[in-house]
Structures are given as C-alpha cells and as structure tokens.
Image (cartoon, rainbow, N blue to C red):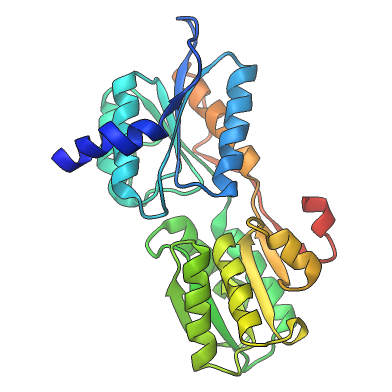
Length: 305
C-alpha cells in the first residue's frame, strides 16, 4: 500500500492531466487508457474533442505499459479522490477490478473501453471492438493465402486479457477447416521489441514457416523486422496484424505486411465518453457498444488512411 501511494504521489500524479478550470455545473468525467501508443492517443484525442464540444470537464490518465497494473490502480484511486462522476477506462488487467469496485461504491459510473473484465459486473457498459469477430476476419484472410500443412506462428498480446485472447481465438476460428500447423507462439505485451524477439525465435526454430499472425500492431512491426533480418522476401511470407497502427498501413503499402484488422479507436473515445455521460444523467445505455472492425489489405489501404 505504501508503494502504491508513493507511486500515486509521483508518476501517476504526473500522468493525470486535468482540463483548465470549468464552471461548477459541468460534469466531471475521467478517462484512463493503458499506455502511450497511437491507438490510445487516438482514443484520448476523440474523448477530448467530445468533452470540448459538450461542455465537460475531462480528467485524463495513462499507464506506462501494457502490464502497468499498479499504475492503473493508482489512476483509478486518484480519480475517485478528484471527484469524477464517471470513468471510462481501458482495463489493463482483471486485477484492477477491486479498485473499480471502490469507484462504483462511491457512486461513480464505470464504462469499460476496448476490453472487458471477465466476470466483473460493475460496469455500466462495454464500448469496444468485437475482438473475436476481428480475429475471425484475420483467420478468414489467412485461409485464402495458406494451404493445408503450412506452418504459422502467433504473436500473442498479453495472455489473460480477454480482448487480446479473443483476437487469437477468433483467428483460429476463421481458419475453419484449413489444417495449418501452429508451431510457435509467445506473449509480446503488445511491444515491438518483444514482437521482434518472439518472431525471431519462431523463425529460427521453423525455417519453413509460412506466416505470422500478430494480435497487436507494435509486435507486427517487430515481426516485419525479424522477417527482414532473416532475409525472407516479402512475397515468400505472410504477415497479418491487428490494430492498423504503428506503421502497419505503410507496411501494407510497401508489401512488408499483407493485412491487418482495423479498429476504430476514435469511435471508442467518443462513444466511451458519450456512454459515461448518459449513464451519469440516468439515461438508458446499451450494455455492449460495438465500434466495428474491418480488414485492411493493399487493395483498400487508402480507405483507412
């Protein structure tokens, strides 16, 4: 507990940003995102715009990494202390649920963005991509470019995080009856560095590997580097990602990456805050708000720029 309060007094306090002073009648809403990558920055930007357009006071916090559990707990606690009326949060791990329980007990409406917390009933709503469907889109694409007996590697995100697990499970479903062999997989914490490392390990152990599927955008960039380091030509290998971020669109245009699943983080930011506001006002909200997903390839990449 002492460690958490020390953290709150330092790093988390620096991470929490409040808008300039507002009139007393403005609703005060919090937004907490996982860590600093373009995907979450887009969510934040859309939330800021929504807040400005709708006369809200928005308090923003962000963790330091995909596994920054203590940081996110500290941010939740800080927002409760600051008196927000609602929190929209991209939960970094199910173990943040007790901190959110305290927020709910204090009368704060909680909306989860991007991924759920399995078994937790405290949220007003979930605003996210249907990640199982998104993974299925990726698998259906892979089914068109692979054949029975081909070997594939998987770059997982953070195992145990439902949204990221769904992307892998959905991909497997999308393969249907295609009998590919999954010869290697590993957690990447959604970082480019671990993406490179895990991809290199899989490629080294399986020189006849035909494809890699990455459950997050940054590891897909890492895999691209590993493939290049191995001297494999773009037209001899299939790389499919998820997020359409972190240079993936450029990689598709150059032929380094074959496809990715696009989410719509701006919708998550806008609809996440909109849902919180409606809940605070006592209006009816949907339990699940689907923000959509789509497959990006060289044929349609310009539509996603």
